[in-house]
Image 1 (tube, rainbow, N blue to C red):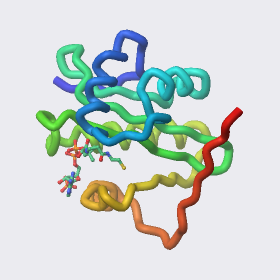
Image 2: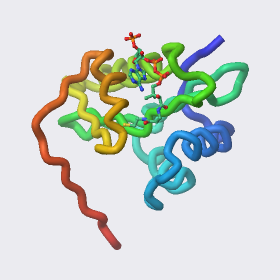
Image 3: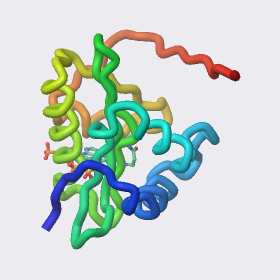
Image 4: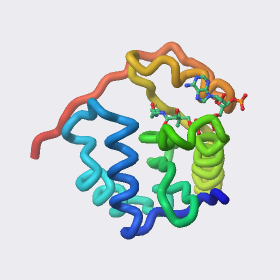
Length: 139
Ligand SMILES: CC(C)(COP(=O)(O)OP(=O)(O)OC[C@H]1O[C@@H](n2cnc3c(N)ncnc32)[C@H](O)[C@@H]1OP(=O)(O)O)[C@@H](O)C(=O)NCCC(=O)NCCS
């Protein structure tokens, strides 16, 4: 049986292994140790895991900055894909964002991962004409 739960520290090894499998060419600033530690400082209830027999089989990070909600890092173990786990994670993240007053959710998909667009479209997301930009802040 699968259930969605708020991330707890004991889930770290499972999420780290999941991310290594799901995001093999990840940027160094997405490393699990630093990303999850930072997420736990801000809206820790928006870091979710999917569990089966207490093992992490999926995870998602969401955030709300008072204007838009954001979904990122959604992943499901290859062995557990196409069973609706990704959608369960997405829907629970949306419920938690909506409960905070969020009315619109944004997300980004890297161009090389365009096959994932269908997953989001099947859950009601639409492609918007935007240019995505970013900047690394060095302190
Ligand atoms: C994207 C991902 C989380 C989907 O998880 P999942 O558990 O397999 O997805 P679900 O089983 O809940 O699928 C929900 C729907 O999306 C569709 N879908 C899922 N993955 C799809 C894909 N790669 N291509 C086309 N459709 C897909 C399913 O067929 C299903 O359709 P339905 O509406 O007819 O039921 C998973 O493929 C994954 O971990 N990918 C690697 C990490 C990644 O790229 N994350 C996204 C970063 S932007």
